[in-house]
Length: 614
Image (tube, rainbow, N blue to C red):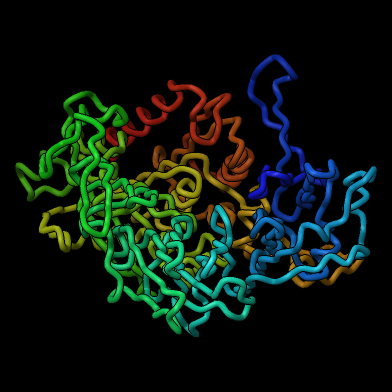
């Protein structure tokens, strides 16, 4: 529900079932026959149908947005992503195509919407013509055929008194790397009056925009988080616009100054009329709340367990480490290398304390922790919680070096780099991880860290969960000579088994018929190569022949990556005669969060495999 500024009219988004698939999952319980049922549209299935209803408290009537009217302005729309109020009289809606390459934000007057009366929502959805004459204004539109339009959470546009603002990928420079940037227009401007406010090879965090309008001055202050001065460091920034000036300048990394210091990682912030509160940490100082004004910056006391700057933390300083109290934590060193295309790949490298203090001539085994899916960044600098991974810290205690690795699709990079996955999943991830491994095995001194590390190239392991599980399976099937062990958790085995919204964004529609819109009866339309070639079964011949090199773990009640994904992998392994080890967790969800024992078993088993076999 979203309330109008006057409090008179709430919005409601009704989602009506269409022909979506119902998935059945066995959770080994007696009640209900041991099956859990859930709606889950797979790739190629019909999506649910949204209908936006509004209740007018002054009249007691329901009004609605006619889908047929929306199709008149955006005939391609599939998803109604965001909605809310532009002002006290005007609604906004954001619409996205099924392939998510086309996007538009429209607005309309509330008073011009038809009333529901005694009609059922289904009859409205069945309308194929707009008979109500609802008029829409296009506020913003973007098309990115070579990638996708990313839709951040929250309001798509900040509608202000002096200026309107939004954050989107800057795809307007020919051949640019398309980073997230701020755009603005004079308040009330049209869709063609948007102009860039920031520019450069760095990202504005799309969900971090906050605007302060100073009454009576024409001044607008815009706050945002970004990695403008270091791709691995998120800082807080502030820029100012004057509505009386002819044209605000475009801010680049050289013309903006962060509010937060250089060696701090910012988690979140809140601006008030008196100043800005923000939460940040360093690599050795837990998160602290700071209060910033133009005249001063001060720490707001919160807890007495915070460490003085410069002291190495131990696990007793945080209840979330999962390690015995007093266990020393190893602080990682960040490194960045480039793949064959010149795209930066970053890693947080952990070196056992025993190795740093004693014999550095020996070569250490190394385990990689990966995810690798689009728009996820694991590697940050100055982030206090980076060391707080119980599996990695426990491995370090046993003399195993560790690296948390981001591939090309890290959120530190631009959309041009991330779009390597477009119709291409399964064909680049392993190369990125092998590039990092080759760097770590051939460079005894880590760049910028002045830390020695000698890695045994014969003892490399890789593990991850979800997309990280998929990446692990790819690594073990495409580079079995590089990776001795692979431990894949809840992996996607075949993207045809995953959901519509996520998968079709990156791999497109399932068949050529859907892609082209050409339909021929009595003709079997083949699945597009992007799906066939990204399935693990397409790479199964490359898995190792030796026992105890491949491990797969999965929860039977995984509501995100269904267990059938692992079944597809196992079936392919059996058909090819490849050995594997399987760990099943009955009743467990995607993150093994139902039972504490499940997580302990998984982590303990993973560590034992690493210590005994690596």
